[in-house]
Amino acid sequence: MKLVAIIVLIMTFSFGYSQNKNIKEETKTTITTVDNGQGEKQTIKNENIKEVQLLEHQAPTSNTINVEQKDSPIIATKTTEIINPDGTIRTVDIDRSSYYLLDGVKYKVSSEPNGYSILNETNVATGNIYKTSTNSYIYSSKNKTSIGFFDSIGNLVLETYNPKTDKVTFETYILVKQ
Image (cartoon, rainbow, N blue to C red; front, side):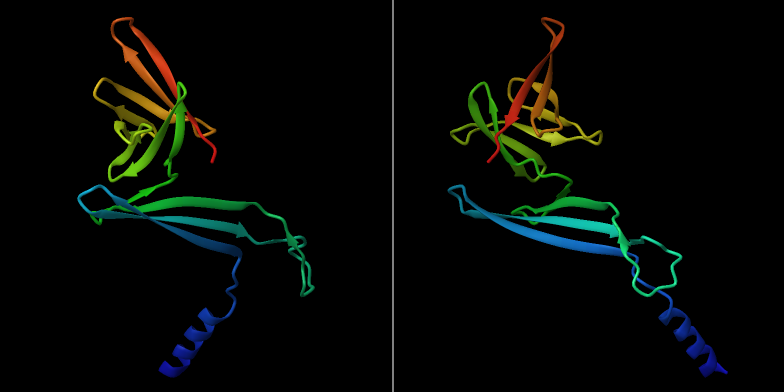
């Protein structure tokens, strides 16, 4: 009796299941080594791209074996996992590390363990930005603290309140296409 029950259980879970979606996963690993004069530090960045497409048929009630597949949308998600030199791991949806222009000066936004640092042309840090839970960023430097966000084309926009003029000013770091 046990044997029959086991066979029925195995056959139940062996048949009738088919894959109803195409899944494509890709990982790109970038290793950056920086020598700061005190030794080399390595940062490892893994970009994970996952594309999922649900399989749908042109005529799902057809009794034929080969049924044409209907075009369905592909849902792509991209996450970046950053492994810092100290071994901590940080996962971000979009890596914002790149070059930006503000008033004709080129700045580099580079990933740090807690956010991003903004470096000028001579690689001197001018400020840091930290992501908040509301998908905005806090910019912090010696002279000011601002709220920022990345617009739809990737530019960094900072909003700063000036208590002397009682106004909010905007600065836009324009993304440099490489």
